[in-house]
Image (cartoon, rainbow, N blue to C red; front, side, top):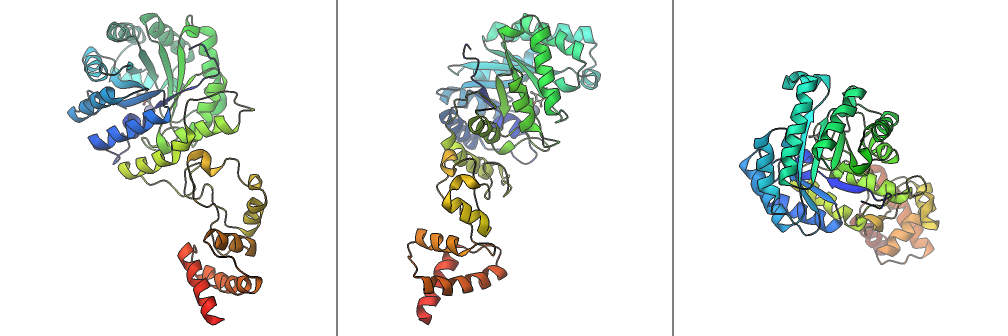
Length: 387
Ligand code: KIV
Ligand code: ZN
């Protein structure tokens, strides 16, 4: 990749996202989400973990066959059987990728029972095997953040020498903070021979609510691939949310002089479809895609956005494909908002009519959490009947 300002978006909704307990999707649902991701401009879609089940293998193969633009990746552990199965599934794609990983921290080395030197041999062996099958090989140091820094440099160097083209530095347990996230990428770029020949990826989990900040910090230090999921779906507290990093890069060009290929107007539709098929609803106040993300209820805020939308909005709803109104009617709303809302609903109110509806609207809003369009129309009808 020659454009140093371009950040690749690697979506793992269908692999890490689907690993959330209860988020399993059907074959057809996965295919539908993959096609939407492809159309939205996602650079790499991690379609699944082919060795995990027959169903996952079939889904990855189908997505590989149907994809038009995106690179299609499958996950595999560091052994030949996993890697071969992964290749069988992704090889149908116009642009296939094998993604292979091993846990490199002391805790993970304990589990695989591999000493540091044995692990290096395993990495050399499995990455070279993957590279014999596929030109595009991503290697991940699972739990990289809790791996000794010197050893992390050694495993990364080994993977690069064996032929990996992308090196992923995951914060598997959502433990890091932005300063550390950027320091690690900067250190690897500075110390590891061959580091400038590969793309560094950041893969953050959200256990401390830092996934977006940590991913952006890694990019500031030189990472050029962000691994993320729609709505931040993922194990435990989830992964970096695609919509958050993409919109942060778009909104804060002054601090993040980077670009992605994402058509942001497709974000809302994807968010809603992923929520439906995964059965994981989006929290109301979720950044970017929450139901309340562009809603204003208090009179001061409503008055502000009616006069100049930028007073309380840093993005436009249309940027993410939202067309609905941004005014929520509730007990904090003022007269100006009520007049505008009524106008949007097709009713131009005279001052005395507005006063009358406003009094009854406030009484209703004290009893109801949210006053819907139909409630307002009913108030108006009552008011016309009373005059
Ligand atoms: O969180 C993680 O470390 C992962 C790897 C498999 C990339 O999901
Ligand atoms: Zn993960």
